[in-house]
Length: 276
Image (cartoon, rainbow, N blue to C red; front, side):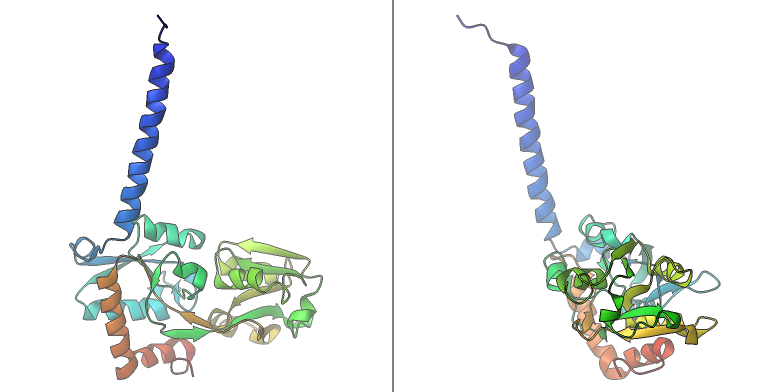
């Protein structure tokens, strides 16, 4: 009669059980990520917006520490019309899709560029704003086009649209620069630019224009449009299953396009109508 090794059998059964539990958990997690959470999300009449609160002029802190910005104003106006309160949750921008998927936030609304790669993870609203990638450098560096970056050091934000385009269109900058330094926020990159640690920052033109115009000596800076990169479109990012929330936001954004609300907010932060 063969002697049963109970210890090995218990360990083996435990492993099998752990695998089964993990698979069930994964199936449940994927299923829940595709469910419409409108009733649950709005049970307390509040929605949570994830953002990088250093991203001027879309969402940032003014001198008094108050959260302001183009997207902040637009989100507040949208949910006021929908009868909901909005809570803004600062997040690590490189973890934005994870924060959304795990339910820590209900949407990403913060100069969030629509890309095919991101569309695999989130459901985007209709586009509501356009922008371009630019290089911000000091005039003294004499950078006038992307080829002038050959052998120099570039700063970019981890998880940004610019970082994605930098890797996608390698010949434009990646094959030119000596090194690329990753930052968690753009303000840190721009600070390093001014003290000479890097030669240029790859950034959205909205951020660049606002930042430079509010510096003590704007003429010290040079903004160079990267024409080799496609134009960016901003959208609100939702979980795949949140069709109700997405539809309601889309409907309100369309109303704001028609009644001039978006133009008014744009003039407040950019000095022009939306996408003029």
